[in-house]
Length: 258
Image (cartoon, helix red, strand yellow):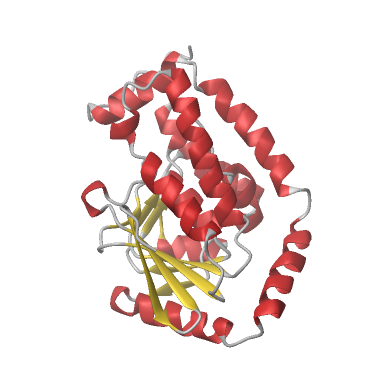
């Protein structure tokens, strides 16, 4: 499979490695990358385990590309977000085990991609954040649902409402990440675990994922619909436009609550 924004390889039998490859933009996802991620996940029929990582050493994914979003009308923003929603849904609905290998910063939507994976290995020095409230919006990639399931509700509220970054070690301590690896050993450790998974029964892997999903409580898709309703409520606001404008102008936003 050939993509403009992704590299898809087979590092070992039954293992697919998908690398987000927009290094010049800290692997931020634009409309094209979102569509390609959804396609790559949805088209996968042979792998028994998928690993998702970012190109380079600086970032796993810096979130949605705010340069592309700068000056977008509300209608254009909403149309783009539908593409993003399909990407997040494809990640969460992936029938085979999906591991995030977080090699650098995972901010905003990049952290949401991580939360859509089954589990996470992070390089020491990687940083995480859900920065949306600092931009006058809220997370829109199901992280208001996935994050509390990973770290508990009080910690999830602190992370989302403060928009403050946190370390790989904190992510591991809080339950967001399974393991912290030395940067030069991250992929070796991830692929070793992926190899153990891929050596197991493929039908059993899919059945186990289906059963495990039932353990997390209320229907995730219904809960995500609640998040999207709340997300859409802030799109027409002056604060949303000010937040993105301030980001691109490299200044603090002046929020007015309008």
